[in-house]
Length: 576
Image (cartoon, rainbow, N blue to C red; front, side, top):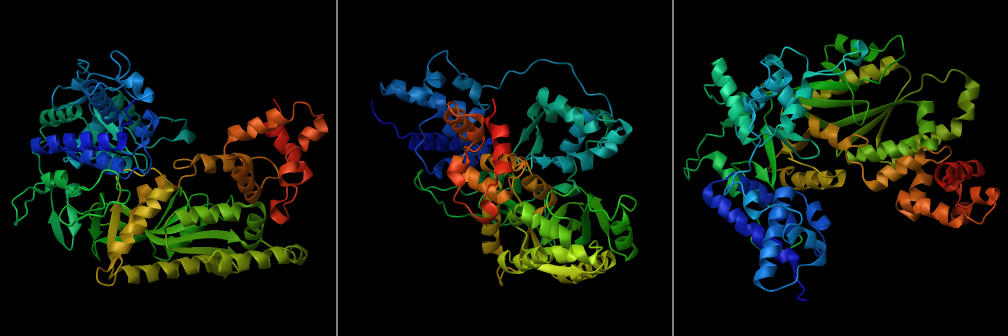
């Protein structure tokens, strides 16, 4: 059987398809171009459908199109299809007809339905919001949808479990997705956009309401050096509409197997290396201090910090933060959009900092703060709470070690305070310093359409900083609040490795260091289970409990697993 280079074939077919769509002026060309870029840079030979499906931007439609092309190629050249792809290319097995895969040739048949959302319901308001705020139909985040939909809905988009109100108007999105009126793409953050059916329905709704004069909305404008660029604006140089330029973002024309394509920059469309960005000028945004909603002084003074900060004429809001206890954001005065500035704080009592180093929480928190991509990380340590001298003396060594680790090993900023009032005074002063700093600084807002992992996001952010944070350019690269919250949530972007470590840390006596050591040895939960179940069958119970000691008995210090932890590991992972 002839060995097929699927990487090359798939890239050629995608490139041909993209060219066809570009000639027709279809917006699908941009999506196919993104998939083509990722396919070209894929580092391994593609041999299975799982590999092909795993490539970013290769969705079900593109996947089946490539399978149909493969079937046709094998038939024309009398070649046996690769075994792994047989179920996708053999007649009547898996997949769809080629004609059904091309929206430009044969439109997908949709269910005939007379369903129309109830006026001013959640679904109705979401359709109206998407139509008004996303006329280019590239997709907007949940926060942006809700910001535009709230005024058109009689129900709240926020649930209130305390009042036994577990549903919100946002639940209407499920109906719209099910009825194929709205599409959801991406991972962090997810973005929503109208399908052709949804666009037509929203247009009819607004025409009935008498409110569709199709003006350009403020949210569709891009601010760059004080110049507004709208989707209908034209370039004076070439006469091509800005909206259509999105279809002609330069793609790599080199070998499909090139691992590191050169970065492209479209200044007019504001796209660098395939990622959109925006420019905020000084004076267009306000600085707001954000506190985590779990940051309380006591059960009876839950709003102590916010009250005291607001009393000092500082804008302060309380929310649930994915990482950090305090951070600063910039809020655009016209659009209301929010970006995270490069400053974040973790607040701890001195004894709690020492204990967090002992039990591994400090390392885990430090790693998550590092993955945030924020340059300035502060540890705010309060000495209050250590009521008696005896306790202070008992923890003296741990406290000294914790402070040394923060300053030297972790390369973080440490601020020590005697009382909560001192912490508040520092936060107020820091806010004023940041206001002065950003009164003359331009912000470059990175707006990725989809992010698959925290590592990918950090690489993208670093690429932007290398390009724009130069003395000549004079920008500071920041990311949106929505991306910050989504990429740093404890489970949203978690890899199998990180999930396994978190599972191990649930076992009593297994710290972060021990969990990392065990994960490095076994790799996956399945291999750990197999180890216990294969090795322990012929052993008496006491030896079964100590089984893991054979692997890690030479470890010392914080990595040494004591007897109690060995028993707990066996009871959690070894008992059938």
